[in-house]
Length: 417
Ligand code: RNT
Ligand code: ZN
Image 1 (cartoon, rainbow, N blue to C red):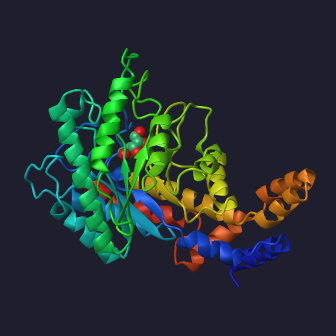
Image 2: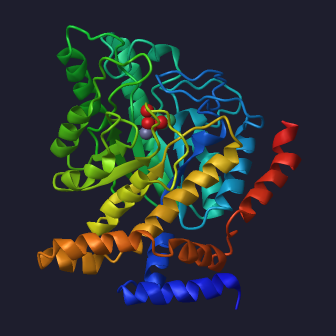
Image 3: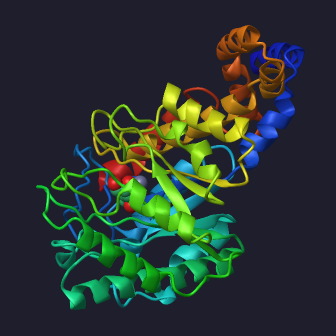
């Protein structure tokens, strides 16, 4: 018996004594899809030939080896996916199109421009998620779906409509539902006088984009709010209240919660169960804001763990889609992917290893003292032993072993770019 197996055996017994079935927890943690964002690999630049990122979001750092082509990005993504245990999907942005070297504007994209992504996903046996791209474009400078210029607003509405067709195509090709996220960067540095007008235009734009329902087995649309961005500190029309109301009014639309899109002391873990009272399904952008919406690499930290606990404790795994959303250009980008995704999965496993049934029993009995005591005992249970065993069983590297693999790839591939 290896040390990993020995440690697992002890952990399994300790968890069983708490009423937790570790095999069941590993199975559920493994089978729950986590959607890996493609944009960590190239600093959100995409393949339209753009060399700058706009829209009030920002990557910092210039670590060598950024993916410059679709082929490089997919090779890097494949490398990362091979080191992340569990069912993964890949989350693509509309500016990651395969245009064959010809200019295809955002209002012209078609499924054929994403066929190579679908081929790649089918080949890997994974699902795809999708995102409209309303930033890093000259027509986005003064607003997209809120733009008072009707021609520009129409351009972006057309983009949204086309994105949803591509999502349906992804759903068909992969046989797995595509979750499509819509986020716009529109906002103002200073408080505008008319705060209602842009929102009424956004409402009209959304109604036009979502007028036709997608087959629910192919595509589900989600709307993502934000509090502020760089240059939109004072006013963002697509606020939490706006999209929450929109999702409640339109039951087929999901609400997206991004961990970095609220006031610095506000946490999305505290919002999930309220939303579940009013919307059918939720999309999570698991990210890490540091003092602002900085999109740092996801950690195995309190909030990431609390997000997963809220989903598991409320038995909502089948109503919540989990996606990662961060971009760090200051460290090896593949390591950034793997660290964040493994942390998200580990946090999910940790939540599934909580003695939820017993905690709920104490709660129902009114035994708040023992509820608190057990919740604290659970924190120092050997999650790591179960995680290591799970990785080993899935043929995935255990501990730091995967970093050697990425270093070798860096030497052979990334450093030559
Ligand atoms: C921006 C949003 C959005 C983006 C991606 C690239 O603040 O979080 O989800 O990160 O679409
Ligand atoms: Zn996000």
